[in-house]
Length: 154
Image 1 (tube, one colour):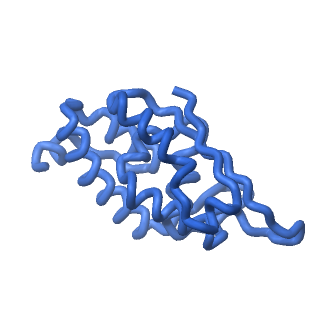
Image 2: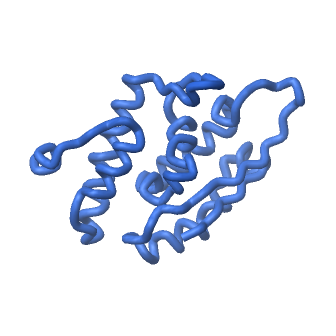
């Protein structure tokens, strides 16, 4: 899957999820599909504005709304292309270091990861998608190792 959600400044400022709706419908047609979703974001800034997109309140708020509407979305992002890390940066306090990349607030990231695991475990089960490999792979991308015994208690 090579789906792209293209966002312009108007959609971001209006919290308009319309650019994502068609893509979400396609993803739901095959909930067992492979990750590959990317975002293209066109948000105009002054040349002197040093902020990353994830530091701009209008952009972050759009992603907070998207995450609330589609909590399962992280499963479908292009993880290898860095979309999971960028998506999480929209939702989790962080700092950006030119040499080390994104440094998330550890406590915030841990809470977000565990909340996602609980939601996604149930969501996958409700769709008959068996196994925890996808969840384990997603959490590993974010630096967490979940044991099978953890899933047994869910």
